[in-house]
Length: 435
Image 1 (spheres, helix red, strand yellow):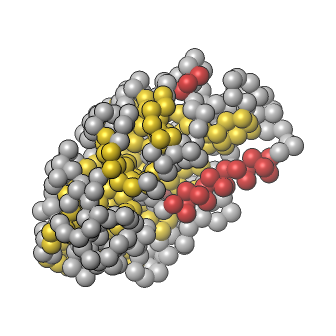
Image 2 (image 1 turned 90 degrees about the horizontal axis):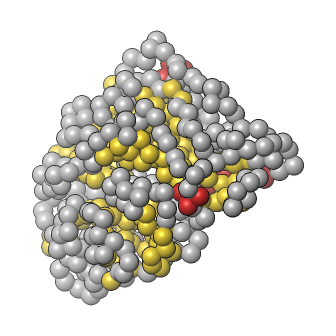
């Protein structure tokens, strides 16, 4: 099962992480560094001291009227319920229906993105915030929105089960929380949310708390924390998110100072974690002059098949690209028990360009699109990342959504655009906001 999730994450956190990777390389200049072997750094943790911590307050319900957004003049910075505001992210469920989010409001469309209806929860207009996150399930009725924290120790999760006609909210406490990525739900009841407490990263590390719900988000319980050694998650590394294949198996991703990819796996629903090694990553068989840093981002699953992005920044001492600033996709066909890459035998697997989380969209096990973050050039793969082909120039992308290998939408500095031929050509969508 594939869930539809807004994958927008805090841009400043991504910039910090990429800067962090580059600084790692600069610090290492002039030294000889041998990448760690495949057996180092495993921390399986234990069950002791890992009792779930209840974290919830009584839910409140808010009803919102559906206000059509069908008049005015074409929006330059995106639709919204109270003046112009840049879109943070959006997700289309099919060729007609989708949701979008900006700093002020939550909206829906039923005509492919031309006209929008405001479904912002009552009391939250103009309070969504720049760091808001949300996840949607397949039916289009269920949505979870996590606005930017309104206080230093409180997280609010807004949820709807009727397509935004009514909303409920739940608040719980965490210390100076930062939302890493969207909540992740495998059905209408069970989901997870990763938070970074204590205000975010510092000195190449940051804490992480993982919360779990089994009642659709009414109550949340802390089930793992880097402050609890039994959880197995290290403080070292900048966290980029989590991704669940099913109720028991999940992956936590990020990047750190080591010369090995940062990847942790759980097989008990998120209570305990252990490091998972990736084989054959660029630089893993290099000489002491090899110096490469890595960042993993949450894998996307389609049944037991999944794709795991790996960002690569550094210096290789052999091959067609001595300096590497690109990414590749690992693939699994056994539910994440093992991950494989073709970069050794197929040079095109490792791209010559860098992308961002907002500029990468995995459509299915074979098709994905990625935007060069420096040039705004769009690339496409039709073989699971073994090769990438330049297809269009779309500008720097802040959000992208495809419903199949042909139909897609994106938001860039050039505007809101749609394609019906896999990204080869794009047309601008005139859409409207109220004055």
